Length: 317
Image (cartoon, rainbow, N blue to C red; front, side, top):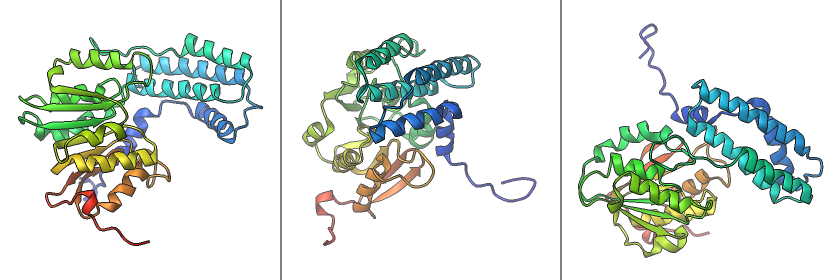
């Protein structure tokens, strides 16, 4: 309530906070990046000024470093911006460039964009996409902390950043289990980093690591056996839809399902996006879940009376 006007203020959209958290690039560099992405998508990089792009990246890296030292950006946000630059150059390596241009890019990646560890004492994280969600999760899921026998599933674990948070904050009681599914092939050494981090958080005995693609691993898990499922694997729309359907089968009645990167921009999820895949699945189970929150992430609770996907009515074409 606004004390001066007596008008209740609208709640702030947390999605805006997350966007602002990760929006580290200058507008000038974002414009440059959009132009290069446009060339890549059009399959026309003949007019790319590679040296100009590399100079722009170098300048942006310097600006990010200064902002980080001044405390304006978190290390996770800077890491996200740096990864976007890295991804852009890797996309260029897949384009029809000269051999000398590709060598220049590879050398630049080694000299300026080599992956490094973040400042998490005792841990080996190269990215931190989860810290921005910690307070939100603690608010909505903190009541689960200390409950014995909880079974959690994480689809997409990367280096174990969110897994370690779950283990140290929610899965503290006896006989809890966290099943982590990942291909562990995002970069050389990813699995070693994950294994180290799980050991370092001191709860490795509560973790079952399953290496492989979700479409191969999830069907082998027992139906209706999990209390909480975090879906953060492939962000391709059809992959997300498939993971959502698999998660629904594995979730017990009353279980919580959280989908990452649901709405990452203004408006509804764009066609072909991660969020569009989630919406496509939820349309099929409409009336069988309740929404907990919907912002950058989407959390739903499977109703006690929910039916399995196979028994839901299918409309005729």
